[in-house]
Image (cartoon, rainbow, N blue to C red; front, side, top):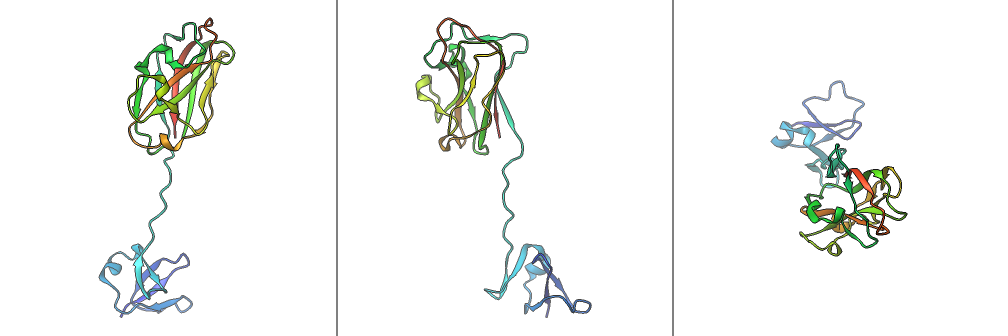
Length: 199
């Protein structure tokens, strides 16, 4: 009859003798199942059931990596938001910048833009999403629990900071785009890279 040794971490070890382990905690396991003998690390002894049970699965940690989605990546030319209006619209007035993204593994987003020429006070970019391909900007909702937005009213790097994703944005096959808004209809901000970071 095999005997079961529990180490300090509660792991099960199957041995044939108690010699040398007089100070250890020993428990009679009766006839040890073959599966336990072959893979003792996969089982623990349950005092409640007086039997071996499967060891609990290790916790699933969120991914430690990040993903970058480019909405403008040309390093040789800026994208100009001509006479940026106050009303919301697609980036540069075009819905070509819609991307389908599997968002199931992500929990946060950060929008960044290299502002070469500043826009009017209040001008900004906002990351938005929809569950299906839409060509009307009003059909898109905020990607985050609060707006994932980057102000483009000053030259430099516009950065939204990390924002938790809205529950509706988490899942496979989300359609993501960038909304522009807040201009005065005169100033034409010019942007270098426009990227959405996900983690």
